[in-house]
Image (cartoon, rainbow, N blue to C red; front, side):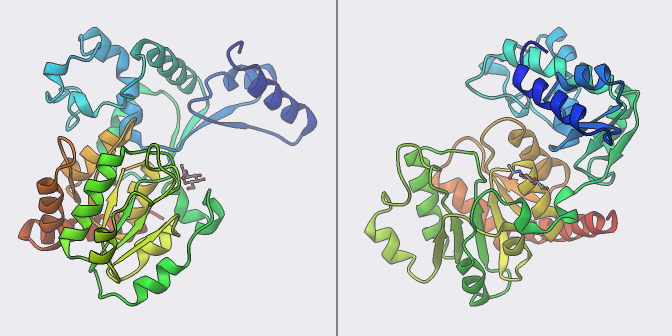
Length: 345
Ligand SMILES: *[C@@H]1O[C@H](CO)[C@@H](O)[C@H](O)[C@H]1NC(C)=O
């Protein structure tokens, strides 16, 4: 409790003021709320907004520690983690610049408190993460409620953190079915100028229409899109539409959208699945690498851009998804997964 007095006090206040509270629901990472719940003799449910597979990976950290996966060794990054297929060592939910020891402490607290809670609410569904869920059930002796995808239960606009550009939809209305590449890296990720320009030219050279969300702050050291050269803007005139933020669920549901180039945050991954849009995966940090691995190698509903952004791998990824036989199969599998997602609601 010492580590987060403000949160703790706020929770206490809330409980004191409202005698109708019968249960505390806490995000899994807030590992101190169990103490608050206990002090009021209230049951606590833990809510996990991310995926189950990354949660299982976190829960496996002590095991992985024992098996000497940590500290990470550059030479082993491509190895599959035997305990967590299809994840490779480089897909583990870590943060590249982070101190693994400090993260390890937080993760252990999170897992310990979750196991001691009265139940776990998950933003996922049985048919998507069956294997991880049965692993979780073996390891967690508490009731588990996979009631996701959460976003399907609430109106899309109510959960957006930024104001959305509605021109995205009217622009999509002018495009052919399944022809547009929708590109967004979510609300947190940041990229280098170099990569930004590679993405820009990748889109320009693909010859497909694209809707690109460039959030102010996305590009390190730049305000917005002022670094895009005039030749780029001329090349993509009429074919590319750049906005600061888009109504993502509406965009993904639009018939003109054929692929989603994403950072694979869990929300985006689930939203894409629910609308049946195949993905081009470009994970940045945390659970995104594992999510991308599941998309490309477990569910096989997308392709991952591996080993840095290069002109050739961008072109290959887009071509594979939009033109090739493999892309057709990916689309078919995606539609099956969409069906499963919708039937679980
Ligand atoms: C993810 O979606 C939920 C609704 O399902 C929303 O409350 C939350 O803010 C979203 N997270 C991000 C990072 O956009």
